Length: 255
Image (cartoon, rainbow, N blue to C red; front, side, top):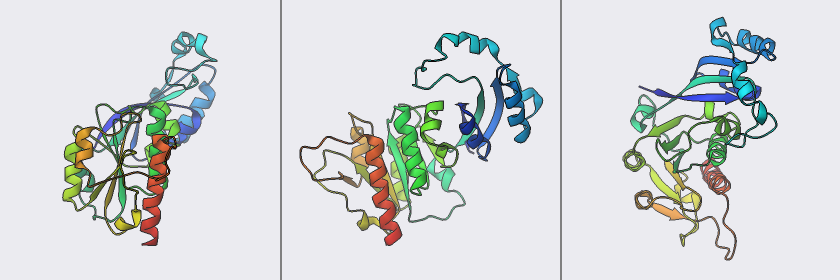
């Protein structure tokens, strides 16, 4: 059965995105006396019950010295926030139960701990039509308000599969007939996405600096880089991942 992760959402636009997702279950809406009127309008519009809307002026006072600063994630402090449970899957088998296997692609992230990159990759994966995002429960960024904002709401639309063992899940993906393609800047091979236009593909990305773990690399069927130009600086992982996903998406569209 799908389970959930707790997420605290800041920002009215992000909260609106969350309320439009069937995977979101609201716990409570915390606001301030100053923003109570707007919070009540929000709650009424989305069918929240009165007991779910709570004034939390004490928390706001605690952060009063930071009102014009950024918090530890680089986010501006906000008065009103929505506490929700976001539904996630715990295995590939659970996700694919009752679904027809496709020839599309999905994204796997190995130890992406930076919330900006985590969210940006969700956004790109959703935009380019990935079927799901696979990531390990440990050694990954938690789903925070920064991830929500960087994903531009994609976190509420893109199916998420949070697993305890990424390596085992990669093996399972292969058993479904898919290919595991790892983006590795140290590879000698340039990616040719058209080779996999008719195949089920899992694009695997590692963290910046360290890249994929050794075992994750070994599980990949093919390791590739994006360009053969020498002496160029490497790309941010979210940018590199977006370019790779674009190539995969276009090859499938044309193939």
